[in-house]
Amino acid sequence: MSRYIFLILIFIISCQPIKEVDIWKVYYFGGQSNMDGYGHNSKLPDSLKKVIPNSMIFNGYRQNQGFPKGGIGIWAPVEPGHGYLFETNGASNNLSDLFGPELSFANVLEKDSEKIAIIKYSFGGSSLYPSAGYGDWNPDQMRRNHYDNALSTINNAYEIKDINGDGRLDRLIPHGIIWMQGESDAKYSQKSADSYLENLKDLMALLRAALRNENLPVVIGKINDSYMTPDGKPTQPFIDIVHSAQKGFTDMDGCASYVTEIESYEFSDDAWHYDTDGFIRMGIAFAKAVKKLESECLGIN
Image 1 (tube, rainbow, N blue to C red):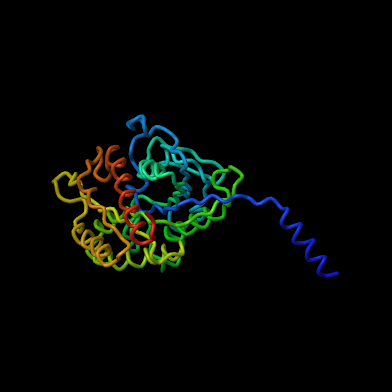
Image 2 (cartoon, rainbow, N blue to C red):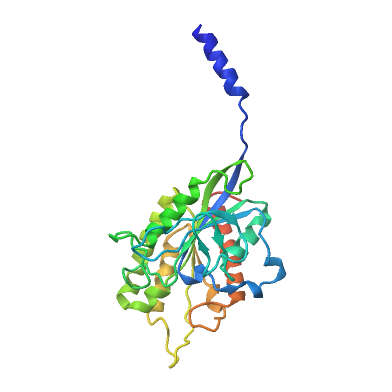
């Protein structure tokens, strides 16, 4: 009798509809304001004034240190408007007039007929060193900070099983971390700059652990100084130390890459942020760098 019941159960299970699964390549975008993005939507070429096909983004709510709700959000198509002043309440998004490197990044990678999923949490002026900026990413802080908000963003993004709402299950596979940050640490003090290498190593290890791959490709964007001060002096007096730390990290890590071409980008009319063309070029450079690392570290051609 039990054999018949077992066979009936097998028959019932076999008759259940099997939902097809789509595979999405996941990239985490983090850092400070040049990861937020200050490119102007109005100055984009027509080829980027659109929704990028086969690309989704979970842009986590940017919250100050010590406050709740950081990292809430929803999955949405990649399109202009996910830059600085983007807002979300976890149920709907309010796009801004600005974009970040995610736009051209997705535009490059989706052309390989891949599904691209970007998880983004960044915060302008933030530092790795405690209290060196507008909140920090130090994992040892007692109160909630940007590191905690990044983890919440990742966890909230992964809770959604159908990220584009097409009725098919989605499997999110981590493929890289894109990091654009360091200006605050280069500005605050020699101590914050001297600590940058160890702080960067610790944070990247923790983000790789959160994404469950210790060999996950990491792309580091080289920070730059505009020298746009009244006396022409650096805005970041300790930038050379941070440059050395960024290069040191990528030199010692076989699955990390240092995007140095950023130092040739033009600044906008403020001392800290690149112009629209710079953010387009940044996303393209990040895409090329991570694609090369995917081949070397993940065995993907």
